[in-house]
Length: 289
Image (cartoon, rainbow, N blue to C red; front, side, top):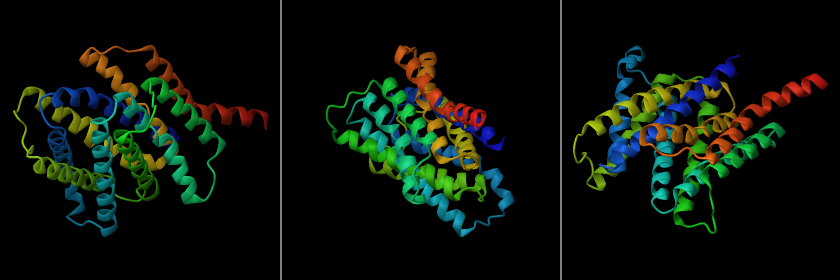
């Protein structure tokens, strides 16, 4: 039951990440990406400040190091995806960013020296098929932008696996705070380097975007991921997170009046099938065994 609860909570995480995309797009029409990111993650980290009182300023070295590593991989994921998107198509980015569905089971198989279960393999195959249909990808050759996005998918997969392996016994609030703070500082340094530390103007769009994405898509979402992802498996988690582009397109339709296509409906349906397949498969096996 705990696993099922955790997976429903992770669906909310994908949902909240999805709503962040169209909102970020509105703000990015006026400001640099890393300007928005450091503001968003700084605000999100500050939200946790009142909850840190109970820790009495005591941070275990293992929690600090884990938060630092998670924050670095979180930043690398955002950075590689952003750089890649500037050098390749949005469809290629959408497809290649979803390769975590394949990378996570492969990396776990290497770590555990054990082949993935057949359920995980079939779910991953269905999931990547859904992403291909949604993105409408057509890769004739791999360009520089594609390589950056692939690296981003790898760092995202590593982030998920680290959470799976090491976050279970840690203080989820403290761990989330540290990784968000690290992400904010690194994004701030990049924005400062490119002379984009401050927004061009503090418009209502900027304030609304930063507020909503900081609270829903960052503070709450990453805390829930940190707390509950370890209660399911890493390959299940990355499959659930593949719902993010579906939610993003739905909210883009509502907020930006973008069209919901047949490919989204079909691809999304296949991803949902990928998520539910192990459940049906286990029931069928138990019935005939």
